[in-house]
Length: 291
Image 1 (cartoon, helix red, strand yellow):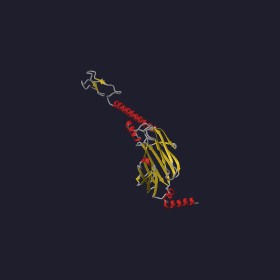
Image 2: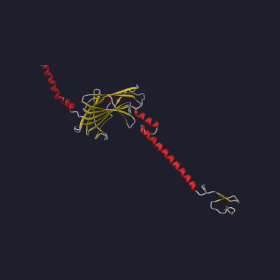
Image 3: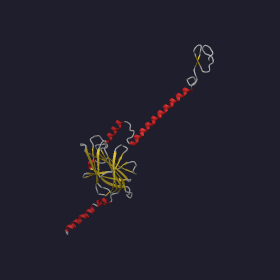
Image 4: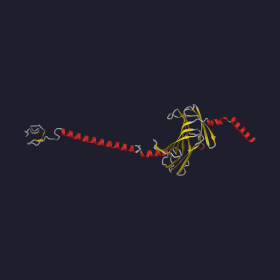
């Protein structure tokens, strides 16, 4: 019976000297929502990963959070908070600690919304490219959403888990998204992105060069193109109507001018041949009576 007693002593010592370990896992603040966005090769030859989180309504403020990001990122590019979902982002002081193949971030939220960004390298030496991010499950999440931005000039984009929703952003880039539902604390959620791309430029560089080459944009959707064509057609019709109205007006003025034509027959002097104005009874040149 000595072994069970020794094991019991070790467990007691662990709870006496490390009381915070069990409590930290049990008392981790819950997230109402977490949105994971992955933008491969957006403005760098790397993946921009954005974590947008919202605390659950019953979590008391201020709340201290700890979450890990990949060590390969070198650290966060931004850690911020906001008072609401669309409010301005404010810089948030944070601590960072190396943890195996990750960097542990720790920060205290004065409001319910946080925003974390980091860049993670992507191998771009081959046309077939891939990136894998794993949400480590540091916090319990009631609703996990994933959004992946398709790089400009990329083809064959595939994401696991499958992201069924597709859309085009105001930047002209295509997006895949899906609501994955709840994510339990301690359960890792891997997200794998694969695509083909031979152009070494980033999406930002490709979009800029495309805009300068094409000139001012007049819309990319079929509805916008149809509206632009209708605008041109309406303008052409207006010009034709204006021109026709002007020609008619000049013709009408010419008809109304006395002596410029019409029904009055021109008179000439039978003696000297000089032209006479309508209504003249005598020639203005020789004085002969006009017939």
